[in-house]
Image (cartoon, rainbow, N blue to C red; front, side, top):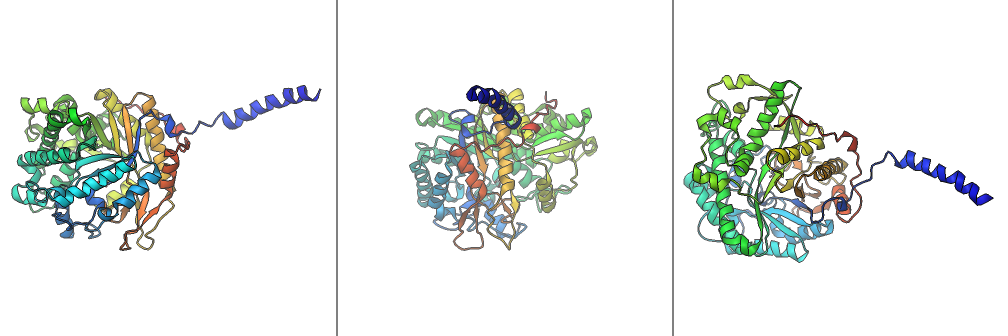
Length: 520
Ligand code: IFM
C-alpha cells in the first residue's frame, strides 16, 4: 500500500515543485548553444599593448608623436604599455588557460616597415612570426588586423598620410609583405580597424593624431573639418578594397584565408517616437555605419550622406565602384553601446558644416564631446544588449545578412591610481553575459555572426584615456616595471564558459524584446 501512496502523492508534488521553481527559469546558455565552429576570442592592438616603441628597429607612428607631444589627458604614452612585445609568451599562456579559440591583434606597420615603405625590419618580421607560431602551438587562431590607427610617422611627414592617395599604394605594398610572410599561417585578415573613428577623431574633431580640424569644429593648427573626414574615409575605403583585391588575386586561392574590414558600430535609437527622431536615428546609423558599409556592400555611399554632404563627399568612380562593392568575406563590428538621438535640423541651416553637423542629430543629455564628459556619459549609459540585436537585425535586413565577426565588445572601469590591481569585475561579467545572450538570440533569429571577441584580453593603453580606463579581462599592473598580469573574475567567468559551463544565466532574458524601430 505504501508505495502507490508515495507515488500518487509525491509525484504530483514534484511536478508542482518543478513548475514553480524551474518553470519560470530559462535554461542558462553554454558555448554549445552557439553554432558549431563559432569562434570565441579576445583582442588587443599593437600600439595599445606591445610597448618596445623604440626597440629592435621600430620607428614612430603618428600615435607616438601625438603622445610624446603630451596630448593624452593623463600625459601618457605607449612606449612600454603592457610590454606584450616581451611578454607575448605569458599572454599566449593566459589565452590558452582561458580556452580562447582565437586572438585578435594587429601588426604594427612601423615595426614591420619602419619608414612605411621600403625596407622590411627583420626583427619586426621575427616578432610577428614568433607570436603567430606561439599562438598556433596552443591551437589558437591568429586574427590579424593590418592597420589599427598606427600610421608610420614617416608617411605623415612625407605626404600627409591618409590625406594622400599615395597612402593607398603604400598600404597595399605593406599588406603584400604581411600576406607573403604570414599568410601561410594567418587565415583571418582585417584590412582597417574603425575607419569611421579615425576619420572623425583625427580629421574632424582633431582629438586623435594627426590632430587636424578647422574652426569652429575644433582647435587645431591645420585641417578642414568640412571635407577631410570624408576624404580620409574615402582613401581608407580605397586602400581597403585595393588590399582585398590583392589578397584575392594573389593569395587567397593558395592560402585559403578570409578578409574583411572592421567598423565601430554604435547603435542609435530615437529618443522619442516622433517620426523626425526616428528618421534622425536612421540618419545617424547611415552616417556612422553606412559610411563604410554601404559602399562595400552596395557600391555607393548612403543616399542621405550624398544628399547632405553633397560634393564634399568624394564620388566613387566606376572603376572604384567595381573594386569596392563586394570587397569583403566578412564584416567586423566593434560594438559597445547604444545611444539615443533626437533630430536637430537646425544644424543643416549652417552653410559651413562638418561631418557631425551633417548628421543633424542631437545626442540626448550630452552637450559636448569633451573627453572627460564623454567617459562619464558612456559609463552612465544603460547596458543595452537589445541594441546589439537591433544592430545585427539591421545588417540582416539592409545589408544581406553578411558573415559578421564581433571584433570588440566589453566594458571598462576607470582606473584608481591607489589600487592598481582590481580583481572583482562583476560589472564586466554582467555586461558580457547580457551581450552574449543577446547575440545568441540574434543568431537563433538568423544573424550570420560567426565569432565574438572580448575587448580586451589585457588592460591596454586606451586611445581616449591612456591608462585611466581599463578594459581587460586580465589586469595589468602598470605601476610595476614588470607589468604583472593578474586574473580578473571576468577571465575566470569566460574560461568557465569556454570550458563548457552554462555560464550565461539569462539575467536579462525578459528585457530582450527587440525594439524594432523602423529601419527601412
Ligand atoms: O581601445 C579601443 C580600440 O582601439 C578601438 N575600439 C574601441 C576600443 C575601446 O575604446
